[in-house]
Image 1 (tube, rainbow, N blue to C red):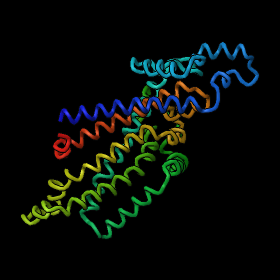
Image 2: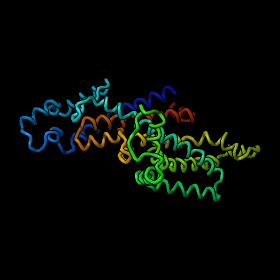
Image 3: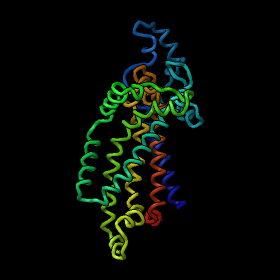
Image 4: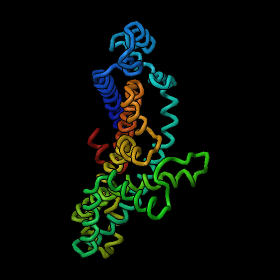
Length: 316
């Protein structure tokens, strides 16, 4: 198991190095100069040069890359060009919205998908199974931002149960804060729950065709007992993959949802920074999201090895 973990850690580090190079140089080659954007089109050349020197934009890109990566290793993400505040503080403030939103949406998605997928697999070919598959197909097809607008129209505008946008803040209490995140979490969770339900059902049906399942049934175990005691554990491997990918998506891909609900999270921070050409903020937030995705993938790989000992044996 230790060798398996060390191998995955080496792969993780190599991925982060390559990703940092791609993120930095791709964003740097995007047309537009932050100093020119800040001063406007009528800025004088000497003023523009002074601002570029102040922001550190007058040094070669490779030196800026080394300074940026070295700072991230020590927790220093640089200073925002626009707000002139440490990027780390901006990320910390926004993370307390994006991370709870992603966890809330993932919890809703998992709590819905696992029992529904298990229930549909136990009734394969029945009318109930067809209804579940129909709803999951609809959930996969509907864009989450369009679904979010429907939720706003129904629960915020028509019924008035929730606010149409904004964040109450954790200072207002956990209930008020989670209520502000309820509609965005549902908008993110239901499409992901549809995908996870289909994967859970398919994985269980594949496992149910194995010989040990038929042996368990021949010994007199009921379908419920076979599903819960024998099939479920082995069917979790592809499900863990989807859960890990979904969490990565919910953290890194909630930009549109945060803008629909005017949530001051990381997604909205990226959107605003791109519009303002605040490159250091964009680079740092994107790299942080890449790091989160890589770490989650690593944890999923370790969970694989824990669930399925064959992976550890293959690594040896």
